[in-house]
Length: 481
Ligand code: ADP
Image (cartoon, rainbow, N blue to C red; front, side, top):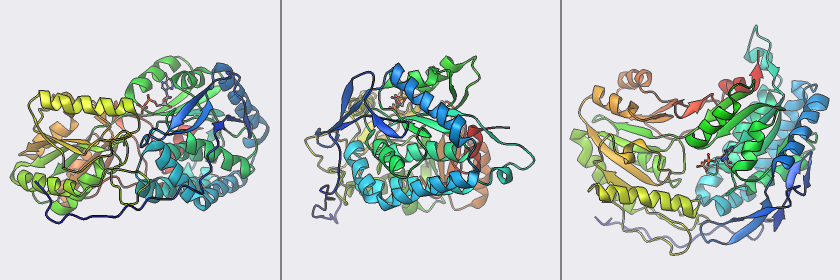
């Protein structure tokens, strides 16, 4: 089906001339960049072109130890004694400096992660700054946040983050930890560490006391060294369910606190009384605009049978207008898949759909020949037990099923190992409230999707993890009472 009102946009790429990326980055420990004891570096590239962007240090156990000791000293000597009001000033300063350098952060995020500049410019970076502002406000109000209790900081926290929202995840982790009086060792994901290193420069320039935030780059073994360090009192992890389980096993029996934000398989429930056009836009936004690289992506669509053909027809028409291509182009809707391995995984799932004999729909749009790109894809009619419905694909792939009754759709929506997010599309407020208590999902959006705010808690049930980030709830994992 071809769209009969095809828009042709001239390319509008964001300039990268003012962006400064060093050829090589060291580890950020104790307020400065230091050479890794491991003496090893690895490269990071632009997934849209394959171009090498920089090399960065691969921290080993000794490097992680140096970072943790710096964080411990900063905690004992400075940070835990500092009044909340003073801590808050530093955190506000970080927020302001991110705002001042927002354009630079957005471009580097898109260069290194492949996400469209529109997303990094309008969503990731402003929200990262907002998280710092929001938690800065709590730093001197912890006694009000938890009345009649005595909140105490934990000490050194180890934080490990994934590649899909590099700066935003760093903000989600660092801001509440600092506001509650802890010091931090953060490990960004190996494919997307550049904005975390830029954040390190900013933290150095804002005169945060040395050692309060340390950033160590590396791979899984770097993360594991952080998890297993005896002076780390809490681990906050966002990433795959497999690694989350490994972490949980390795700290079992220790007194370390843990919060896990893991995978998801978000469901849209579209009822026949829903605003259909709005729902179609929400569905497209929820799975395609970020290449599906979102743990709360709406990757399953359950549509009421009597409106299924209308919804699917409109969805296909909307997909014809999506632009897949250069992440730095302001017109781009779908950027690059983050890595070759991830692209292969997504293609394997699409092939699985073909093997199962399902209807696969992709628009006729072109995709760049270089780099890692994938067309937005619908897989229609997979059974509930299919791997396409049960497993997290982490790509622009939406599986569609129909339903007849509300009981049936609740059962299907809940019948996956995950419980992170859901979207309910209906005209009836009573139906929304009914569903919010029955859907096992940490976040449920009504007649919208993927809306975030620092004041709202986010987190999952079941294999999507535990602990909440954001809002007042997001302070708790960093405190003892
Ligand atoms: P994703 O599939 O989202 O990349 P991963 O769970 O593989 O998720 O990675 C998330 C983060 O966890 C990354 O920073 C990665 O380097 C780190 N990591 C991977 N393996 C381990 C491990 N065994 N222990 C601690 N951290 C790990």
